[in-house]
Length: 422
Image (cartoon, rainbow, N blue to C red):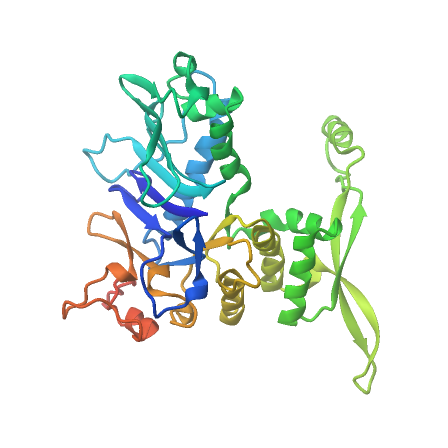
């Protein structure tokens, strides 16, 4: 499970800001929304609100960028440019980008981070501990003086310090050479962590189709989900088709494509709808091409169903930008409830999402420590803060019996658009 993520000097984030999923002591609020894992109390869901262009998507992009840096490092050559995307609106900004993530896996709480510019890894560090109060073990630290390895706790790093290129992550090299601890971090980014878009969701459609076609458990759960929502179809059927190659394509390119696609099939999905007689009784069924006949909102639900139910099945972490786009508020609430409910989420999967849906700002849905905001200051830097961090004009913090939605719209929590009337 994910505990914390810190970003600095990435896009609209100049100063370091931390997103925390460690639950605070709120004894009166939604206990099901918190998982207890190895003495850690961790939030299962977290919502990020903010005005358009306030930095919500940049926070999601930062999570995605860190994962991309970690997973792509193994393929880098000596002079390859790194994925450097700093804050560009400060003349004096010459700092590296900062990423750090803390998560739990296989009984340990790992903290891993690095600083980097376009050409080099400036710093890198890796720690672990077993409980919140236990002493943290330093596995390795990298800075301008070199790489220091703990020879007792990180033996896989011994002797590899000098083999690490300036633009390469030491953790990645150790994993490539068979290091068991470093492999656990790499595998967490590969299989336990996924960042998706709620706007460009069609890129996940092929994965969801595959889950249905191979009749995997997440696909079965997704079908139950669709039936509960009563989207108009009673079943989904898959079929294999040969890829379509345009006739007007140049002969040489067509020949290459035919060779590349030889033996491969596309998975297509049909939605099964009832057929009715004049009396309104069901008298049969008709199959529709899902991609052609279903609404854009239904297609989005299908596209996201793969990542959502795969995450619930394996107990992973899912980050969705713009969860509520093209989606009815009640459906958004239902998806969040799937993660908060221990019956539908027995493996403590986590969902982090950005949204504009203020209907979710309810004590019945989210605790105060699950509600976060992004807001830009006068120099267009993004601030990130939790509802629990807010101090109201009277010096108090928001109460658990407050009307969160009403107060947010009224501007009491900030992070709303200010419209200038001319």
